[in-house]
Length: 433
Image 1: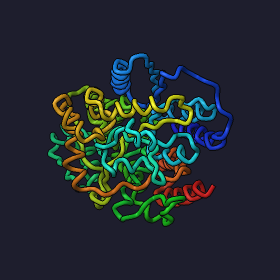
Image 2: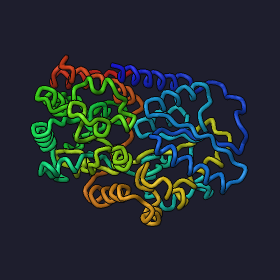
Image 3: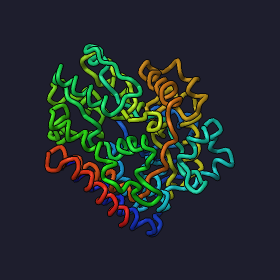
Image 4: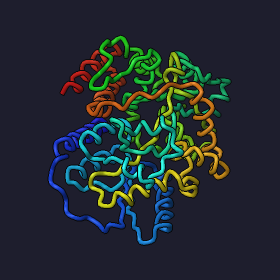
């Protein structure tokens, strides 16, 4: 319940944005050569970003940068509060589920003038990646990197059991492996618990269905989502899924608290984590028993139909920025400067500048190279176009409704059939409000 309350706070803060976007302008906040940049991430990411910012300052004498970082959940609450007071940072990290909300409320600005005059060079960014930051033909955000859905798993453990993951594995295969690992080692599974609706959307894509329409919920039949909820019910009843009490003690937005890397005892440990390909290096750095981690697609009845290339994170310039040209120069520097790309590696995904991928290859760690190889060799040849950004109201579905239903399911207060009906009803209501 602790996590649910935190998510609800974020949703309330996001609602505050919608009600205050038109309030009066603020007074001057900073010198015109100063940038405030906000992002979320681990301590490792923060250190890399600090180095990139210092490099930008070296090449732009007189510039000052105030870097502000938070964990994912806290980040959106702080950003909503700043938006309400017209005190948003100049440059903000943006995520796909929140994109339409921030665009619709006029909180991030049109980048086309800076692209058109050459300040922001997107010549080496593919049209498909650039399009994910667009609305109505206007570019509002630039992807900082690309990644793909990935199950990060303990390869050493599975190898010791003679278990191999087929890249085309199904949800039934995932459950079968989870049962085998639990039966032979006592190690449990985290099947994407508190993963908002990303995994459900992924599974629906195998049926060529979208969870969200342009302005509502596209799936209205509870039977379409019941297999997803049944996975959690079966895992708890059969013992191979982690108990919900484990998640009450941790914050899954903090990488070093993920059950894949945070615990040594089998009652709290998971053999896998549902995440993104760019997290491999960070996760591996947290492993204390020497085991090797590896990547596989999220399971699906049709992995090619389900899988997609995903913008790892975006950068956008806010309506409160006093020097948007300097902010555009910083985004240009981030995606096009070789040293900046060498520093960041694949922390925010594979570089969006295709030339930079090859340019920095020799400086990348083995795990970063594995992450890029996974995207290039496994996902790109066998994937489909990513769904459009979710409607703004989907924030409540992702942040509160889905995790709330998952929690009740894992505590056995409801079964999978009830969870499916609750999800469709509550999500539909939320999207109509």
